[in-house]
Length: 289
Figure 1: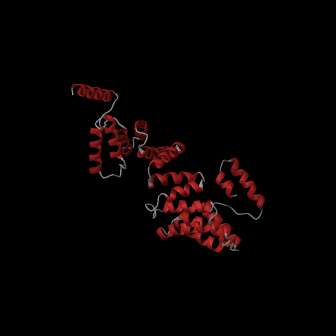
Figure 2: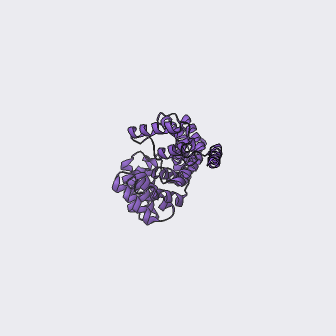
Figure 3: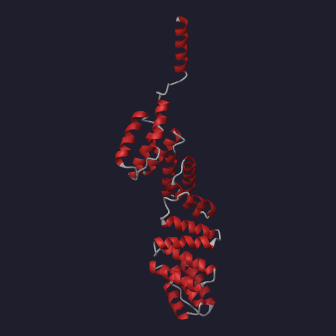
């Protein structure tokens, strides 16, 4: 019996020496705090968040979860640089903390660093599904004209963002970029059902009708877009072109004036004015000429 007790004591000593914690060590506490912080954002109810913060600080005050919570607080106070530092610390201590990547990605977007933003948003989405992070990454892909990737991530925002006009417009632009006019039209019409005065959807529908050579419908959509934004010179210019094509010269001339373009019978006059505007650095006016 004495030999058995001595052997047991030796085994226990070896286990503790090797860092075995029986579930009560710091490592397990930090792991528990990481699980506790999962899904906590600035939109989390204050009472619930305070309860989670208290638990995390008692479990692992210098772990990844604690740094993540500091990042949230700093970001909410518009201390972006400090928040970014805290999120990076959180990731270095807990590489599987999905929201730390996601929130860091959103901050890098605001900072105007799309490459780093996309990497962090992608890393976050690898770890967990998040409609908000998927939307942000989809917008980045759309801006880069990666229509397939953008569409894939917009689809990951459903059904949470089903009534979000920016998502529906984004999906419509993806389909339009891929040449799928039928699905693009459906998306833009969905937007107009949600928001009848949406300028972008009217402009994109005008583009679709132009491709289909349905110029009367294109004119109608451009008129609706100008009702939403009367000062858009590009829309006035496009409308003038369509009106001229359909034989409505008088109204076309008026639209050209609203676009800031002085019409001339001789094309060479436009070329000369364009050269003058270019030399003066007035590139928008040169493009119109």
